[in-house]
Image (cartoon, rainbow, N blue to C red; front, side, top):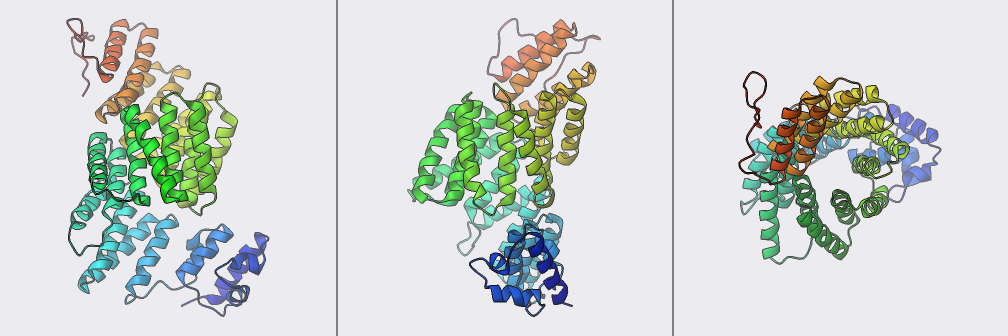
Length: 451
């Protein structure tokens, strides 16, 4: 049963709390008289209209959708839109159920287009839920389906999503090979730049930064900015600025990184993609915390804003990134106890799939435990983080982690193990050593391993 009066009352209440007139809420695509009829319970709005109103009222769309009936089983297009709404409003599990049900109905009706759209939605819902292995399997199947002459699967978008999954799973080589091969194919076709093509370049920038190939990342950043300006798309330009700032930061150009990320923030602030803006604030805070003179207070404020948004619209990994950044901020503030709490919450949110971010969070946890005097726990976290980074082929990051572990071991008098840790770091940077590069034996005669 549609509760139109309840919906109208809720819209009126939220509008008044926001200090808006009916004309303000109507905007350019609705009329004030339509809003008046809605508030009087005399109109049954579509899910698309409720999404627009929820954005203007800064509320969760699901709170308004609850007053109307779910789409009927015969209206597949509306059912697809409803599942998309659930995904955008932060309910990936509900969205997954909707997409799966829709896929079965579309298959029974031999509606290939809707079936593919539902399958893509299900893959996105799995990714959003942090079920990355399952999402990758779905995306791979969709990439194969995209080669069918009658398929409408957006292959480039699927490749970008696959690269995201493989990156978080710690398989950087696979992600880079896939992205580079796809980019080469696109360039061979000599097509004009597109938004999704630029998104692929942006993704590849981030992947090369993670692996430590900063020269390739810098080249792609320049290429991406040039292409984004050519297509005149704010979203594409914002995404390139975002990833270019990461590349500049890793290259030691903090000033350039801050300027690029501020330009990205200016672009995203004009959009209605609140989740992307919150994730960008996370990245901005991360740069502020790692400059020569960290701006901890500004970073904390950005992260608090980000956490508020991501609590309703983000995924678990989005929140985990925020918690890890808060751990770094608390560590710099001289509050290692609080840092440990944030780091552990991040690890709980990440689970077992997000290996690359788990490794980075472990290093923050190790540093906080070291400040608290728990050297044994710190050593274990450092080693686990370094090994995970190395297994992900994030060699540059792994080398720094091994070096930090070596300093901890040296400080605690374990000089032989410290030498071993230093050598692990050198190996990650490409040094294979000669006659002296033998492993020291640990107490009991065991030999440390790197796998």
